Image (cartoon, rainbow, N blue to C red; front, top):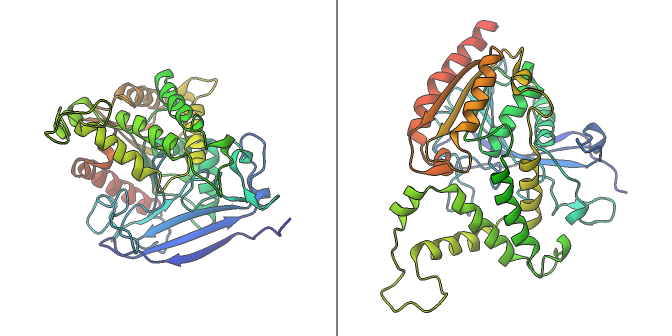
Length: 390
């Protein structure tokens, strides 16, 4: 077996854009430092991450942003050769919600993913081949534990805040539950403390779409044909849940792609063509096995487990800004309302806001102006409290 690497952070390049000082990095650490929640070992573990802004002398201005399940560490700015900006580019930069003139923002790619961090497509050091289904099951708790190793390596004792939407919001909640003394505040957006049966059902249908692809081959497709049909269908199903009825009607209506006579089952409606396009684009950048593992991690997430939810938050001194959206039917507001009630019962300083929006679950990736209006004063108070504490 190859020798295990020490804990090391390697600079891998810069990002351009209006985000201020930015760097792209890779953090690696050996497996014996992080047993998984399942009891299995994984390693060596590598985490891709980006940073924006500068860490102050007191190391009190660090913010960790956590991506949704198909996201990555590239949260802002432009990578060379790529047309699109990072997934939260409208939120990170000078004068923005996560102001890079004031804060040091860290965005890490979660383990289990396929965008720079250790996941099913990574090489298994035991046999020198991609893990595939030999990759162990990972949980939201495992993702956060890996992030904690990264934060330790950066020498940061306490994060100013942990923020994220959807699966990223789950990670923010897990940080609060697992490391209440390591966070001054958290900002969970459009998320839940556990999945409902409906959410699990959608994820299972998406997984079945992938596994039904004839070239999926029980996850051992690396080096050959990829299960693009199954993965594209899974993404199309998922994308329907990200939007709302109103946003789909406004974007597509019942418009046809052309004025020609429709031919049976070709994608004649604009919305049909859009879903196929989204699926086709997605397969170019994502791994089917990562899709399986990450959706399963979300389904297994249960912050309270076998105890009342309020007990998870009892004794926490962190401030919380909790945000949901009126048209989000994938993560309806009742999930966030239950979290807010539990936090109130535990004596947590929580502010809950339900934002009026027609964008559905995707609102946290679109409604930047409203999110900025909420987050800016929240962070200003958090950084003031951090300064007073010193």
